[in-house]
Image (cartoon, rainbow, N blue to C red; front, top):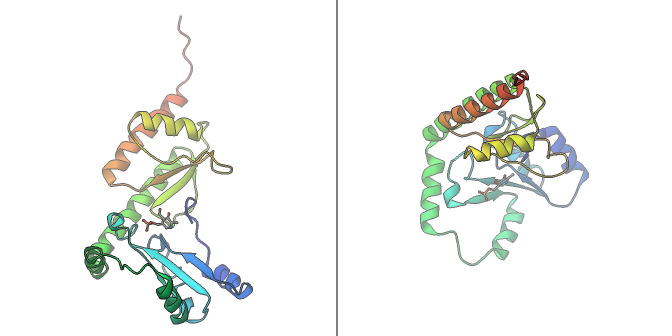
Length: 208
Ligand SMILES: Cc1ncc(COP(=O)(O)O)c(C=O)c1O
């Protein structure tokens, strides 16, 4: 789930599929970052009303080609085929996607890098007094519990040219979403967060 990074278990999704006879569309955009065996792809063989969506924008680092795709029963796919735009995805995008899907070594190295940085960021955030939510995507949703306000942290980081996400919405306005960048980017973020937190913790010194 975006933006929580939390994962619905296969069991819960099965429960949903058993109750609901209409189409169930499951967005697995971030599934490669989640625990193993949390995908519901295999369920399309059992539930003819299930569509599973994926994208090459996240774990394949190919957001530049904007290619999404779906899995479903033959019946659903043939209906989708009938109603889709008559123009197909362009040839260059197809070639890049094919290469991306084939290169498992590059994919695995990248995925492990993101997961490692995610764990490091999670630990650092906890140490800085943040509550961290789900660990199933290439971002972390966190809530400052160290006396700082999410919006103030966001504004401070923007002033330093660091852009994370702040959602001025019910149940999210006290939280921040941080995408997992490179190690270097996370270093810079953490330097500024540490500075902000330590300034906040500095005892008041009267100015006589
Ligand atoms: C939950 C979720 N699904 C799907 C997408 C789609 O990504 P894209 O349009 O790049 O394929 C995103 C992108 O941010 C997302 O957050």
